[in-house]
Image 1 (cartoon, rainbow, N blue to C red):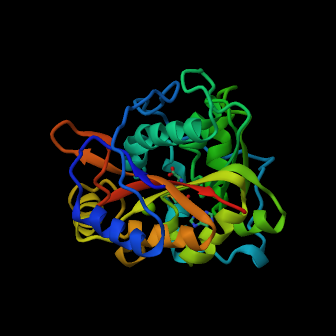
Image 2 (cartoon, rainbow, N blue to C red):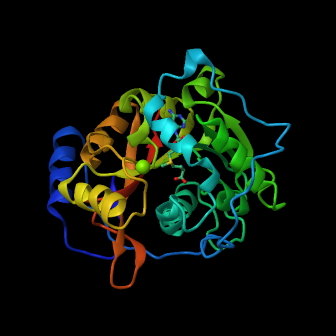
Image 3 (cartoon, rainbow, N blue to C red):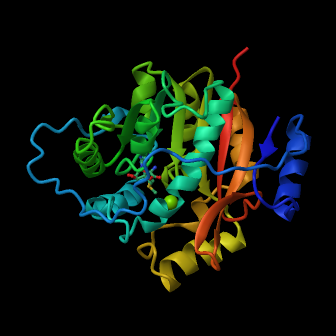
Length: 315
Ligand SMILES: C[S@@+](CC[C@H](N)C(=O)[O-])C[C@H]1O[C@@H](n2cnc3c(N)ncnc32)[C@H](O)[C@@H]1O
Ligand SMILES: [Mg+2]
């Protein structure tokens, strides 16, 4: 079953397309639309911090990804992130959009995990007992709040500089100093036979070399009945206008060239990718920006940014 979450009730044409797609490939059901934004613990989104210096990090927890297991890495894409790694925690820098959507996507993640793993959503640490790997963790924007929610978090990224920045930042606070960081890839972790309750890939799939291979690795890292959550950008005309022309060229939220439209993934394609790797989509929601309120929220409009949870069904 795949349900939608959001504030708007009306179905978009994209959603109708998804249903058509699903009805031809699986037993989809009509989505239920309800959403409540819940707190993710102490928010860092309003803080304007000085980016941490990576100078003097002598005992780096990282190493470069093993050459044999770097198949998902697209060097052109990772070079873009390496070039701006010092700015991960600058709320007004190139990662401003990720800081802005972070509370919304964490709200989705928290609620999906509490629902699936039957955790008490009202607890201060509702993710206690869950192991999470955040693949393509960048500076640790999602790792930190998830650790504060009680999860045991491993953040991995293909860019060594990102891992250094993430590690330095996490060490500043005892509640995030438990996070483990490694410069590696999902396929390396698969090779090591690692498995997690939860596998996250937030805004990463549009930057990897091969969507299918990447999803296969994510599925292999997931315990039976575990959850994979992916957020990304739809390959739609609206996404071209808003996420590329708007965010990169008009508003200057992101460095020009951050995104390549052809690498975006539609919700139908994501559902197919997941289905082919024994993952079944549980829930999907759009992440939308309201220019009037200047706020991001969850919606049933998946035409630009969206997030999806799926479960590894193994018979
Ligand atoms: C847009 S950023 C998202 C960062 C983080 N997930 C977040 O949402 O805050 C994409 C990240 O994926 C990393 N990345 C790209 N390809 C990767 C790969 N094949 N394996 C691991 N990390 C990768 C990049 O270095 C970058 O940090
Ligand atoms: Mg991106």
